[in-house]
Image 1 (cartoon, one colour):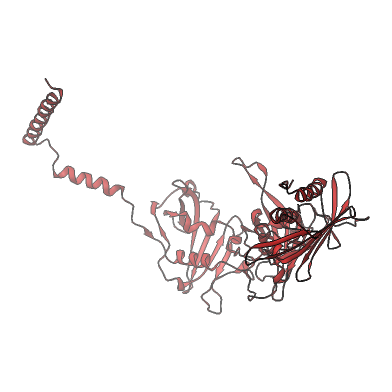
Image 2: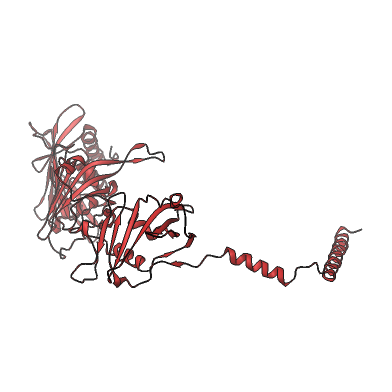
Length: 490
């Protein structure tokens, strides 16, 4: 027999048998009746969320203060006697406080409710952590009355806390998020925004930023550069050397103070001994900034290391203890994430860009003197057409494309390793870049060791580099003479 037909017949027999069984059960009264349906509904109802249990029901305007006592000392959140609606945490007076957190706490207290009553008239509060609670808070009302509550242990996977009212024995479960601000530190109410975004009007000069570091024997300073001389960044390094900046790397250094925020307020109103404890009496780094309208000082103290899941300290630095001057309401020691503090780790060579920034279209001469022999390259070009029309060496035509590669080689001089001590002797190599407007740069190279060369930029000691860079430069000049492809930057 065809297997498909066989399956259909067998399936029909089974269905018929089931139909007969159901008919029999109906006749004998053994099928589910309406009472079983009601039982099912009752089960569903028992699993539904219980209705919230109101504990305090009033308007927020009726709350005068909330007094908290906890393991960290507690605090008093009070309505000012002036009648202003803005609450103040008494112990934090003078510091910038989070209005959102304070308003949220008062609102929660005005409509305090429990998830459910755990036990009425509990005879043993100790099993809920309520016989000797670590946190107690009192809500004081306009009519002179008050109610005090105790916060006990965590319940139901830490989502809730056991709570009871002073003088009563009913035990409630209240969601922990409503109680967290009373369990935690008062310092968490301090606003972590430290320095606002710049308020200087557009066109206001940048001013000057200085960075002093304990681990560096020089000070770094940044200032504006004349707009027409700016290549990428509008700021330049002026100490310990003059250098243009790589804006992709330098912007966090030159502008990172504005909008600076902390991860945590560590300590309020620190004293001299506190500053010493956190490494701020002799800080790792001091960043000072001043322009016509703003002045800030950031002190970076001891480092804070990351920890693993077992609490062991790792090598990675997660944050630093810091102190900021120049902004009112932030007299605290802060934890600031390491990623927001580039001044703690960067060096001058990390943020500078090209040694010379003269565009090829703006120059009319590049004179190279090597061991007394002069190679005088003259040229003409136009930036709008992005074209160099011609190039001559000592009056003779040279390949324009190859000269552009030679100039690119000069532009990408390695600038990571700065040098600013006195340089003696005479240069063995000099490059003079002269612009059409009369400006330009003079770069002088001095022998130091068999593998190192010292460099003056415009008469000022600025860099040291490996001799292979100057060796390849001279070789590329020879290749240019022969019309050969130039070597890459070493």
